[in-house]
Length: 178
Image 1 (cartoon, helix red, strand yellow):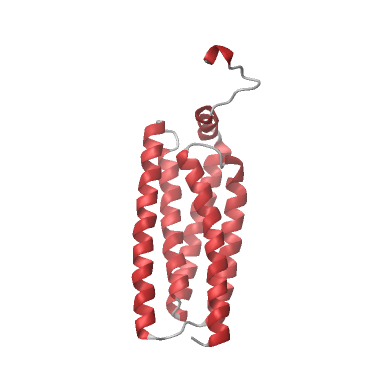
Image 2 (cartoon, helix red, strand yellow; image 1 turned 45 degrees about the vertical axis):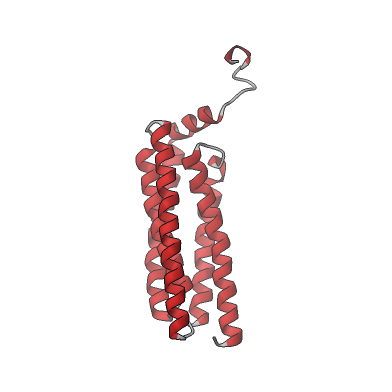
């Protein structure tokens, strides 16, 4: 098959991923993404604790996980494809663990019956949306790479959708008081 494949019209996903891992712009973008996510973790952790919002605390944990995942992506960037695939699996498992924690936190909050403060919830949710959309825009060019690169972009894109849910929850709390 390789005899029929020419540089001008055949580029495998592995070749594209190898090119991206050698691209210093991709590494810089991962550093920017790591720093943005670490900063948003601090902001949302404080705002979530202060406002009593399980949504903001859950998103803060997600930002921490994403920062760790960007760090892991930077670490395995130049490694063999098998190591990058293992990193992608580890990231998936960590997101599952975060999800289980969030379900427990939401159940505890519902049992306590204390509504969160909706203005803080909505405004910080909007800031988080801007952060995630900015990082997603930076990562967009590498969305077709290996599993690790696709995972980084998909997580960021999905986090932006989650921020919309946080802002919807803030509107719900504002409208109902519960």
